[in-house]
Amino acid sequence: MDELEGEPLAKQEVNGITYFAGKEDDWFFNGYDLEIDFDFENEDLIYHFHETAK
Image 1 (cartoon, one colour):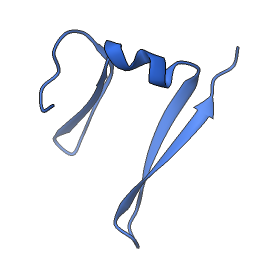
Image 2 (cartoon, helix red, strand yellow; image 1 turned 30 degrees about the vertical axis):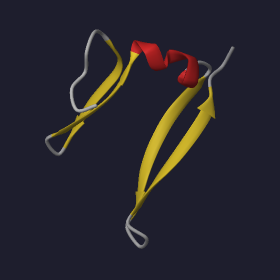
Image 3 (spheres, one colour; image 1 turned 60 degrees about the horizontal axis):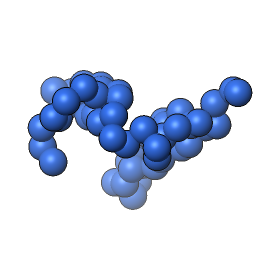
């Protein structure tokens, strides 16, 4: 999917690239904050899921 259809759950632009998750993905992220890093040595993404306070 290259374009967001409907309202985004989250949306962020970095270096001219827009990253987003749709509301239909809320079940996956519910209860967590997602942080994404980049490993320059391995040229790979690193995903960190942090549990949100209840």
